[in-house]
Length: 461
Ligand SMILES: [Zn+2]
Image 1 (cartoon, helix red, strand yellow):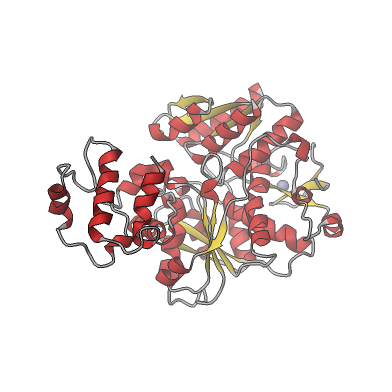
Image 2: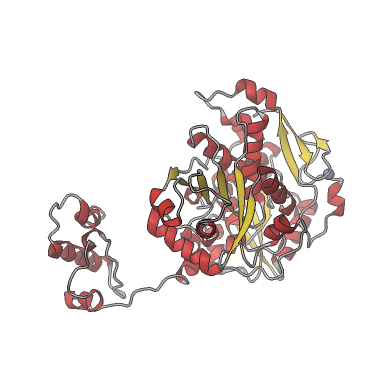
C-alpha cells in the first residue's frame, strides 16, 4: 500500500484516511435521496513514491492499493483474461478488438473487485457486518466475498426484486431483507441502518473504495496489454462507478508518470437508462424517467456516481452512446457466436455499441478497442432467452432428428456442434446423436476437425 488521502470530487477538500468514511462531510449536506451522490471521495496516492518503487519486471500492484495486503480476504479476484478477438473484430468492422472478460470472477461479475477491497477495509476496521442495498451483481459479489472472509453480508432489496437475483446471495449465506418499497427506499434504509446500528456500508460510490476496487481492472488491462494504453475502452454504464474506476486506474498511472496519455472511455448505456449519456451529451443532469431495459445491471434511474462518470468521459476525450434492447440482445448473440463468451446483456451492450459505431468517425478502424465484459450471461438466462428460439423436441430416433435437420448434412456441418432438444430425455441421447452424425458424415480425420465435438463428448463421460 502507498500512503494516500481522500479528496472530495466536488469541493476538492482533502481528508486523512480515517478522518472520513463515506462522502465528503461538507458536500454531503447537500445530498438527499433522489439525486446522484454529492461529494464522492477519491483516493489520492503519493504518486512520487509509486513512481520510485514500481518496476515493470516485478510489478507490485499493492502500491496502487488503498488497503494493506494483510487485510485482503482469502478469495482470488481479478486476473481475468484479456485477449484479441479477430473474428468479432471482423464481424463488427474493426481490425483490433480486444476483450477483458471480467465475467470470470468468483461471483461472475466485475463487482467482486469492489467487494474485495471493501471487505479488506472491514477487516482493517474490525467491522463484522457489511451492508448494501442492491438487487443484483453488487449484492452477489458482496455475499461471495463475505462468505470467504467470514463476514456478515446484510443486503436490503426492494420487495419486487427478481427472485433469481436473490438465489446467489442467499446461497452464499447473506442476510437478505426485502423492503416494502423501491430500490431508492432500500438504499436510504441501508444508509440509516449503518449510521444508527453500525457495520460498514458498501453502497456503490458511497464507499470510496468501491471505485478503488474497480480500478484494478484498468491496471490489469495496461499490464496485460504489454504496458500499453489502448486507444478506447467501451464500458457498460449504469451507476457510473465502473467507468469511474477504469478512469481512475489510468489517472493513477499517469500521475505516477508510468503512462503519458489516457484511453478514451466510451460510456455505453441502454436507451431507456440513459441519465449519464444525456449528461455527457448536454452537460445537464436529469434522472432517467423510466429505466426499463433488458440490461438489468445497467438499469438505473438515478446513477449514484453520475458526476464522476461524466468527468471520466470528458477528461478521457471519450464519448457516450446508447443502444436499444434489440441491439443489446443481438450483441449478446454475436459475442457468443464469435468468441464463445456468454455475457450478460449489460456487457453485451458494448458489442452492440461497437456495431453501431462501424463507419462512424468516432472510433478508427485500426485503433485498439477494448470491450469490457462485466458479468456472465448465466446470471440472467431469462433475458438471453428473449433473443433466441429454443428448438422443439423430437422423437429419439434418427428419423426424428432428420425431421428437424433434413437428411442431407449441410456443407461444412461436420465442424458444427449439434444441439437438439430432447425433451425430458437425458444427455446420453444427445451424445449418441453426435456420435451418429459424425459417423454418418465420415470425417476424414477422426482426431481433428469435424470429430472434435464427438471426442469432447466422450471425454466428458
Ligand atoms: Zn466536498
